[in-house]
Length: 161
Image (cartoon, rainbow, N blue to C red):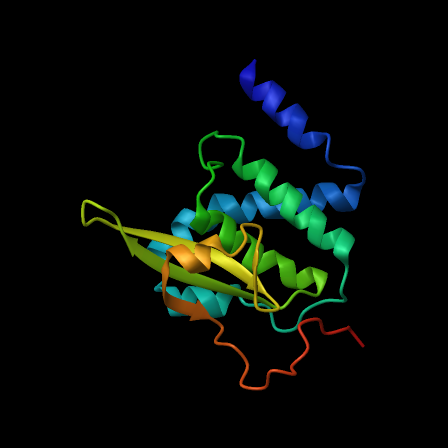
């Protein structure tokens, strides 16, 4: 019964066939992530996940992609368990469809008992997306993809032509 109620809650977000198709694509991507992470080294995976050119800017699509991703990862069922890596890679791959130029950042922190903890987060237009600046303050950056543009005037949103 718990599974059915979780599916119903996710399905309530879907308002059209296009929305359903987007949610199915996001779910399929999340499902495939463990295989991709085992089979590809991080630089190769990142180049594969990076779309060629962002789509037309759409705040509505950005919000749908984010909501569908978070809803699916919050189901706490099998592959659909939330982790910063799944969330970051999924949004990194899909947000460019909404015209977003996204960077993914990875960092580490050393806990009081000398254990290294890793975290990843997204940045859009130089701002941490979804979790505020705490991630950048708490973790020491170890890897960012793609590297920031050397031209600070490079637009973060590229309209389609």
